[in-house]
Image (cartoon, rainbow, N blue to C red; front, side, top):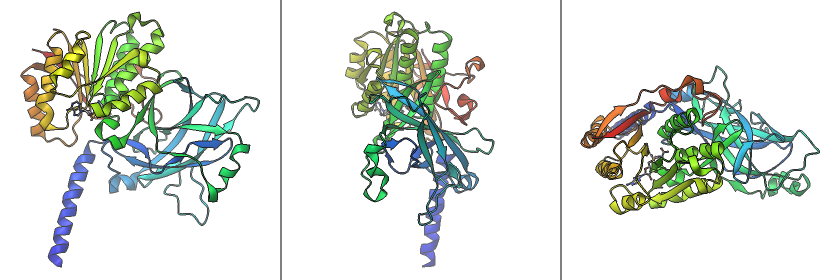
Length: 423
Ligand SMILES: C[S@@+](CC[C@H](N)C(=O)[O-])C[C@H]1O[C@@H](n2cnc3c(N)ncnc32)[C@H](O)[C@@H]1O
C-alpha cells in the first residue's frame, strides 16, 4: 500500500513538473468563459458571466499564482452594423462583482473578475442614456471584457469579447426574468477585438475545440503589432506587394492588415497589397467566418496549403510571386520541420529579396528540437533575429490588448521574430 502511495506521489510530481515547465513561458493569460452566456438582455437588467483564466495551452494558474491572483475586469460595449464594429455611443454598460443570493453557491470572487482563483465572475448591465433613442434591429452588440489598470493587478490577461447580444424590449422578455422557466438562447461564442483606430475594431472569433488553428497565439499578437506599426507609419510601404499569412489559424494577422488598409484607402484598391491567408483544409472555415464577420472579402484571399505539398504551392504562385511571408507560431511539431522549410524554400524561389518573418516563442519544444529546426532552415536561409523595439511614437490605446495589458508586448510575451533571408 505504501509503495503504491509513493509511486502515485512520484507520478504527481512528474505531472506538476511538466505543468510548471509549460507555465514558465506564459505571461499573457486568456480570459475565457467557464459557462455559456445568454445572447439576450433588456435594459437595466444585471446578467451574470462566469469566466476562467488559462494560458495559451489551456492550463489554469499554478497554486502560487492563484494565491496571489487579483484581476479586476471592466467592460466596453461594442456595436456591429454591416460588418463594421465600433464603440457603442448610444448605450452604456456597467459592471459589478457578482451579487449572490444566500442560498446560492459562494461566488469565487469578491471583485468583478478573479480573486485567488482561476475561476472568476461578474455581472453587467446595459442602460440607455437617451430614452428617446430608438434602437436599430440590424445592430448587434458585443461586450469586451478587459483587465482594469489598478496597481494590484499581478496577472496580465488578453481581453475577451462575447456576443452578439440582442437588447430586447422589456415587454417581450417578461417571461425570461423568471429563472424557473428560463428559455433564453445561450452561447459559448468567444472573440477578441483589435482597436485599429479610434473606436473602430477588427473582431476575431476563436474556436478552442478546433485545437491549434482555433486560437490566437502570442506570436500573432506580436506580429500584428509589428505590421500595424509599419502600415500606420507608412501606408504605401506594401503597395502592390503580395503578402502571405502562412498557416494563419484564425486569420487574425492577415485580416488585421486588410482591415487597416480598408480603413485607410476604403474602396480605392490601387494601393492595396494582395493578402492571402492559408492553412490546412479543415482549418479554413474559421478564417472564412472571420473574414465574413468583418466584411473583408474584397481585400483578402484564402487558400488551402499543407506544408510539403507542391501542388498547393504551385496553385498559390499561379497568381504571382510572394514578397512577404508571415509565419506565426508554426514551430511546434518536430516531424513537420523539414516540410515547413521545404515549403518556405519553394515559396521564396522566385523572389530574390523576399522577406520571411517567423514568430516563435519557446513552449514545449526541447532545445535540441528547436536547434534542429534552425539547422534545417540555415541550409537555405540566413537567419536574423529582429531587435524587439516598438516605435514609442506609435504606442496608443490601439491593438489587441487594452486595459491593464502589457506596456511592451514585444518584450513581455517572450516571442522572438526571426527574419529569414534566402541564401
Ligand atoms: C500554433 S497555430 C498558429 C496559428 C496562427 N498563425 C497564430 O499565430 O495565431 C499553428 C498553425 O499551423 C497550422 N499547421 C499545422 N500543421 C500544418 C501543416 N502540415 N501544413 C500547414 N499548416 C499547418 C495549424 O493548422 C495552425 O493554424
